[in-house]
Image (cartoon, rainbow over all chains, first blue to last red; front, side, top):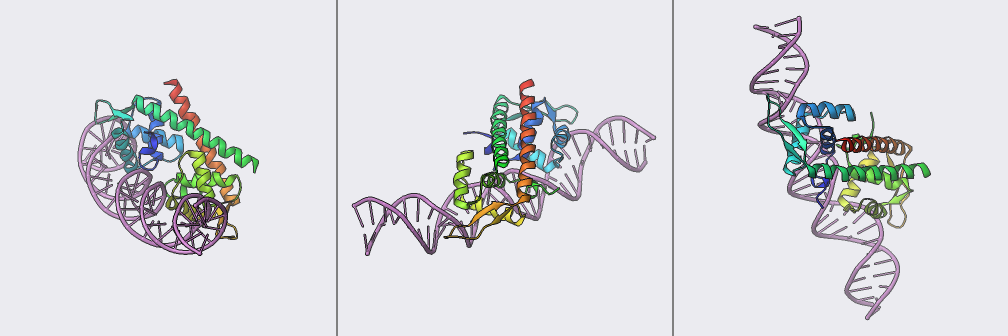
Length: 104
Length: 104
DNA sequence: CTGCGATGCTACGCGGAACGTAGTAGGGAG
DNA sequence: CTCCCTACTACGTTCCGCGTAGCATCGCAG
């Protein structure tokens, strides 16, 4: 096992964070903006930093040296792999659902 | 607004139920099997019937006449519409994520 | 006819993720 | 000096996810 589903039940915020970091290292506030642009909903601090802490515990992301009260994070190899698996699962499920909708 | 996100924070089980019902009306136990086949994880009764209740409250699904201690459900038009929107959002997000992974 | 498994659902309780709000603090604009 | 943006920490509430247990019906083997 050991997929994204280990993070609580599944965790949409966590997925958004990983996607955000897939474009390069970012600190928390920048992720909020990126996720807001991506999904239309900007997560609050409680949601964001809670999910970050869990992702770090699972070694899907790691902190870079702090600079000027900013805490940048980047994807680990494990995080990159987990994200890839999860995204393909997602795409496949979406395709199946859309196919079912089209037929019925 | 008025999307799938109204169902609690996000609700993956709810999405699976809608996809399952997109293939035609089903009762609870059949959904469990269908979702199990679809995702690899068969939801327990607590998860399933809890999500069903919430979906029914939001009028995304509706109960059909009970027969032989089975309670079949089917998608409403609103549910079908919400599912379509959600699936496209999903597919788009997955595509964005995979693109970012490929580049980096 | 009697266990016994599969089917189908209800009831219940716990843990923890999601989310908002408030608070702290530096830095730049005016 | 004041305001607003940046950036994060701390805290509390809500309620979803999920498992367990219980109850009832049906079919089938022995």
